[in-house]
Length: 99
Image 1: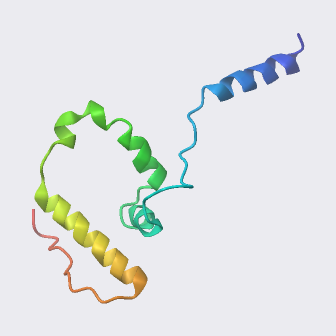
Image 2: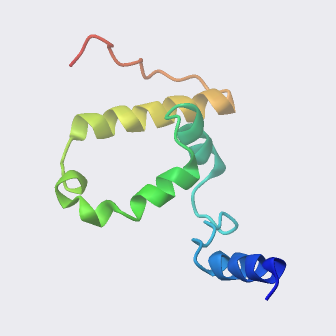
């Protein structure tokens, strides 16, 4: 068998082992939320989706109830949405000195 054939067969076989691409074609998440994750959170949407695959391994973190973080996150999303759509936002930025 030639070196080319061995290399070609290896490429074909290894392509079957790759993860399928995350399909954004029929996503139910609005585009502005994906942009929010990338620009404000510095996390790509693809990386966020990949991370969700392993959430079941960390049950104690997933079930952790932190309502202050949820409120801050929702406020940041609302401020971002208002900014990209040109609406005023009356939600102040959080105090950076608060623990």
